[in-house]
View (cartoon, helix red, strand yellow):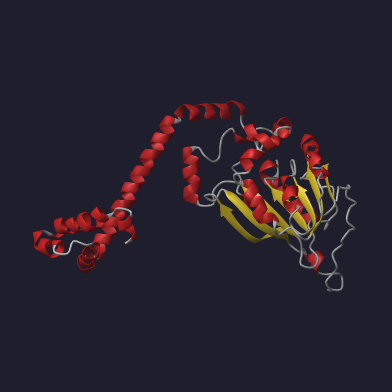
Length: 340
């Protein structure tokens, strides 16, 4: 009845019964047209259609849709063929940027990050940050923090005791410092630091935040190892909260995006400094110091939300006498004062 409200009376009352009549012949004309309704047509089809009719119909529908998809794909590539040609020429001439070149991009964008990149993140990355950072607790480390968008989110999260943000780009850290002038319910500071070699002892933080971090690192596997090292392993253990863009998890979507030139973008690393061709879930699974606790994807599978925890190594689990050895928990570092 809801279909009829939207004006499909002709389809159900005339077209489909007529198809049945044409398919089976005039001998059913009187039967169908005596009660021209969707119900009578479906009843007749259920009585007379065989499995090979359904297989043929499904195969034909699939073939037609594939043909339409290929035609649309070729049309899309024809329209943007000049852009695709320029991108390929750019890649052949310049290749992918080195770490030094990407850091220069970050330095250049730092002053206008909120208006240029942050504006785009509000449509995706920020909402995923809000979703993931609800699980943050205790002493929190934000790796490759940028201008600290995560700090404003953590302000409303209960259970956070302290915050430390590190970024290798000094200009980003300077842009983040004004945010510390706001009142927070916990001490907070930002400092220059290298994600490949974090300047913190083992087991220092309850929560390590990694939002759009791996895509910005030259060696994301090394970065994950460092996050696992500084994440606490005692008691319930700490968590590494990861929000990362990457290639779609579904193979068909991944190949389709590659075919259309959507992901990866050949010049993306040059424009914004981070790579869009990583496979975040595979990186975490292949990290020998981390294990995946839960994960999900968003937006056609191109955004990964991952909760991981550090693995307990054999020497961490047992002491020399076979008993469980306590993990070393250093005293929390003194944080820079913020307004309260």
